[in-house]
Image 1 (cartoon, one colour):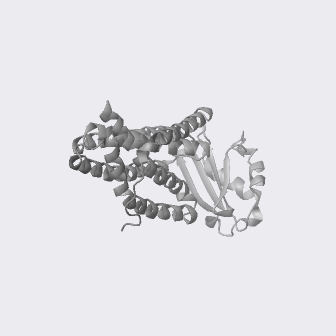
Image 2: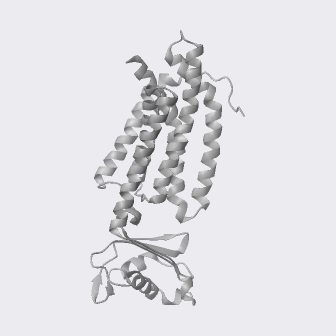
Image 3: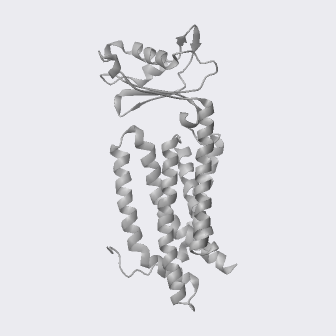
Length: 306
């Protein structure tokens, strides 16, 4: 299906502007990461406890937060008023995330549930099992292991991609692809930091999916570039790359739009559990499509000139 035919857009003429925009986005993201002390990690990586409960009617989240400033568990006083406490789905559902504690009391999560129930006792379901939606707990050691595994997963994926494209095409194509993929991940992480979104295991899965999606689009363009280079040996590489992108443009737009619509619907209707995954995918689809044209392609041109 070709929704755009016979285009002749000089993409490479705007590559400097594209490069400047990319550097600006990455710089803003890096500044946000430095100011915030790194990305905001979920309890998957830091370790901690997540408790989600369901009241029968909407409640005031500020009253919940105020009540959590003095929680007594086994004779110890805890102040959880500054913990992440938020509503999700609708205003009757509340989730609280607590970082791991040294010498954490026994049945810690159960005491948190009891405290939440005491704030609005008249709005707790008669069947107490309907009150607790979920209790998740991750130890700090497991969180550290998961953090290391997540980093290794991304690095391993990039390394294997570098090797594959070097064999399948040429080394300069591999460098262009890896540059575009690193660009996509950095910008997505930066956006998460700016918006104060948590990075969880689901978001790491989204990062790896973004890598695969962006790479697929980049390889389609690279394959067309390689074919046109053989057919037009005397033509400047800039012209060949522009022609290749224009020939692939309809396919790129159709693929990007269909993927975008799916993840956008997931973002709107998928619920709290899949919310950040879908958001990461939305950013990844947009940035991945952009980077295939304005990051990966200019890199192979510059490497060919060197």
